[in-house]
Length: 340
Image: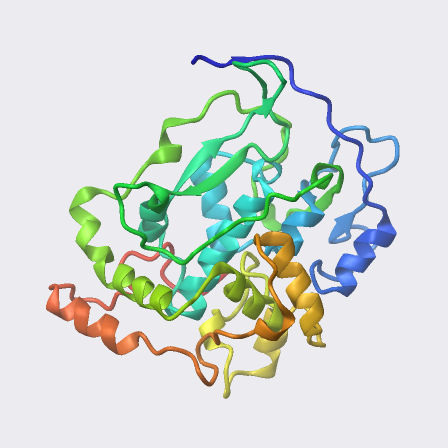
């Protein structure tokens, strides 16, 4: 049935005060403010009934940072904005969770940078318009209109990715907006535009001729699934390590081990003190459906921690057997090196 769009609702005024943003900073989810003239974040003034970010700032939400968004943004986050043609506020909270989990799986378990062709193979973009109560009539959304959906949920394709049961409880998230400094203009500038229809490229897949190049990674992913890895376990390790997957960092997660300079480790971690398991479990439950328990925090260790699964050997054997000359860690990653 064709859908008719009507006028979008007004923005909900922001409830985010400086005190609440300081709490996010204290929790290690926002950077500490270091500049009076150009602070890392700004609470929206009371008279801003809709976003009016100063020059050099974008609109973000508290939920985004609780689910893995960081600043400055990682290259994966910037690539998602570019590929889908969206501004930061147009991601849904679940889309941020999906991207954060993917980045963490690639870095912490597969030992590589986020792999763009693997992303295109697994995910598509879906446009969300708000219901109006009338069949066939919906409203465009100022914020949260982009959902990222697993293609592997289709019945014709076997499960190729870890279980990701996303939370459906995000009450009032869109009234928790504030201004985030856009360092070096890495994110698209805020324009306040609406997306009225889904662009064709939101459903693009990997070029068929390149499909076989993903076989080693998909086999490794299936092994992780069989071993019991889930999105909830991934996020618990991320928060246990005090890392924001979608923030630019000097080290990948699998590189955060012995022998690394303390300066680089400090630049990766958002807090000097580890969060209690109860707090980590609460963050996981806010992003992933289910009753995640504190005793399961860090229950599926990432590389290079003790107890992590070493997939390097099997991946390399598969790559040479299939005629891939380079290691799968370096075959068509999103970017060639680093995490910035």
